[in-house]
Image (cartoon, rainbow, N blue to C red; front, side, top):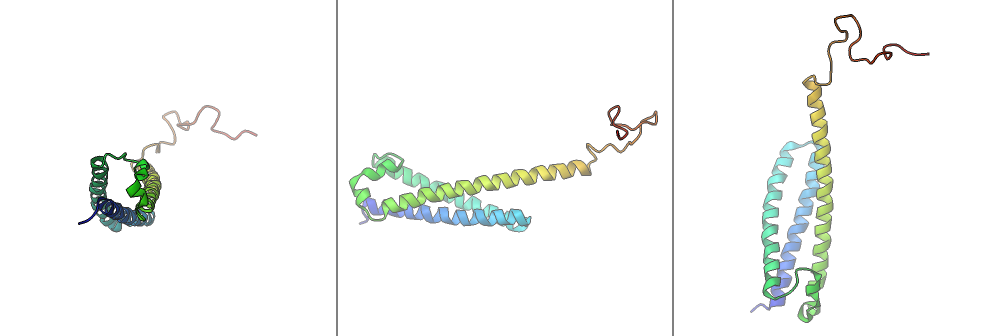
Length: 156
């Protein structure tokens, strides 16, 4: 029969492996975005979605275990003697925290890249659609259109 602390260590280990795999997928997603490789990006997006679903379930299991043991959902749970005395649990907990932080940082970078690419794409579409691009150089009076008065000649 598996003890409660062994079960908790297994939960942490499984969640840690999933977060490490997710980090790898996020790094490849960043590379695919930079290379504008949409086929790879589409495949990675579905892989990431599967990992996130699994990660959510694993985190819920961990939180449920902590709730069932009447423990807080933060590192204060490690103050319980049997968890603190277990060789792997404090280390796994710290590694999991670090991995979540790294994934969050990488997600922020990905968001910034996506927003930047979105902005560039919108600007290119505006150019292609002819917005902000007045094709009429002169108005009906033969004057340059779009120029403020006095800006039509070079001042010495």
